[in-house]
Length: 260
Image 1 (tube, one colour):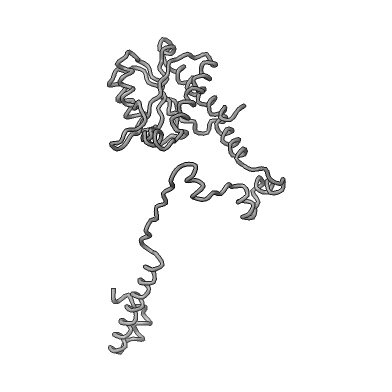
Image 2 (tube, helix red, strand yellow):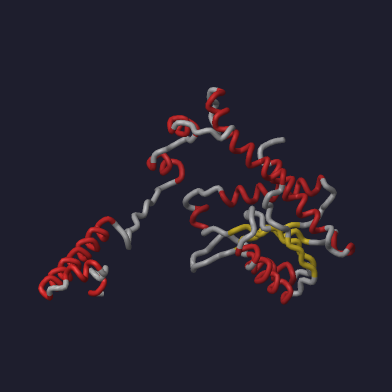
């Protein structure tokens, strides 16, 4: 199959299974609600990020596959997880749920379309917050489609994408990598397309590299700590020498600890 077919087939299969879990009278009219992670509008409208276009295309592919499987349910795409005051991609998930409920929709099959694994934005935000909102708005039947996880077709898609990304090489290095044997750094560099910051910036826009200040056990801090410790040992030794019990103190292991 083509690139991404495993992803689309897996997602459509999971959605179909959740539609089938609804009461028979609710299945045909159930609304397939795709919820994707949001993004500030600026990234799409000003910086040219293709994310929104890719999400919309993915929804179209999945719904086309569902029709092949015999499902003709209506669908909606919305965006979740907005934070901050700037506008994000719309419609927002919470607002769209209330709008659909107000329009008479009673059954939702919720699809976390841009999430491939379960985490706080599916298990908490969708399963708890949005479900509670939906029930308060009048939604009586709710089914949430699980994230893809380790669906076989999806994993095969990922493997194919990795293979397609690798340049053609001599058979021997590929065999060594496949067998898990060590290979030279040159071979690794040949496999990975390393690009400069300037090259990436030309394609994706400015790249901001943030230099984080190290704290704690930096080399400079270790030197200072060492000098403080040596000074403490020297002072303790001198004091014990003047008191005439230096050797007893050393023998009993109290230098430099008796000073702290």
